[in-house]
Image 1 (cartoon, rainbow, N blue to C red):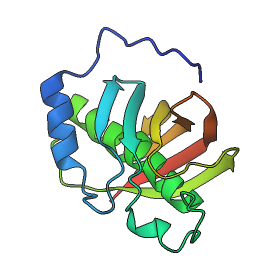
Image 2 (image 1 turned 180 degrees about the vertical axis):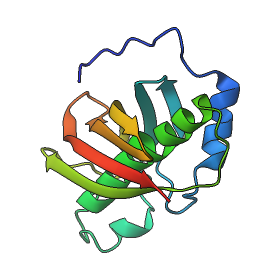
Image 3 (image 1 turned 135 degrees about the horizontal axis):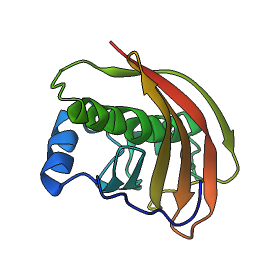
Image 4 (image 1 turned 180 degrees about the horizontal axis):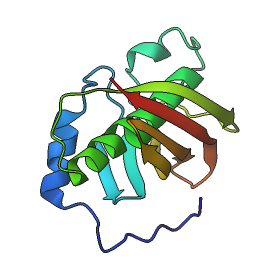
Length: 157
């Protein structure tokens, strides 16, 4: 995955992005996508700002809050599997309420994310076939530093 992303000629329209955001099943307080910045058949780039009053900071860790790794994984899955999966299904002409459920991942964490940090999630499709999506994913801090990266998969249910 590179720092700069080139959007293909087949990029999603603003209307498609709006539809995808409406179809994502995760809702507040468990939705970690605010904007989809780029989206095409091969990648997605989304953003989110972790608010200081997110429910998970109260106990992780009192006095020194850090975004839990499991929340970072969920953030990457919502963009790289759920939103990208919805788009890929739409491109195939499939309008469905099927869920893309997270099935596995291998993620390496390399930096903390603190409250109020703006992050971006970049995911690049490895494959999408027979109802399974596999993608390379990364989550970056505002300053461009990678906080976590790896590979994750999801399966349609």
